[in-house]
Length: 114
Image 1 (cartoon, helix red, strand yellow):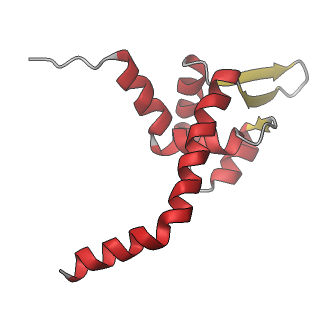
Image 2 (cartoon, one colour):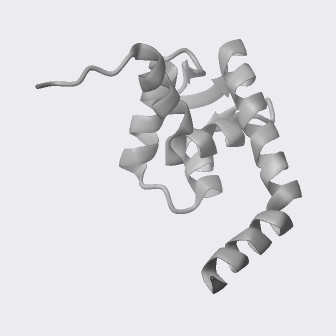
């Protein structure tokens, strides 16, 4: 029996995937980023995974890809208004995690010691 995933869940998986989160956060500063610059900023992402993630986020309407009419081709990525909304929530969650990390670390230590 095949289980179908609702479309909202699929979008949630795109946004909250390992690379989806990092790409949206990287683009959240509002500036345009070239592919190579994004790859350097994310450090350990492969070219293939970054390409797949950007395509998925572009398809979902979160990322805008602009090809500049120059030689060699110059491609820049920015967040769309929809992407800015999603990135805002991710940045807020990241800030919350950072602010509450000491309490989480204590809970982890208590659990590990038990």
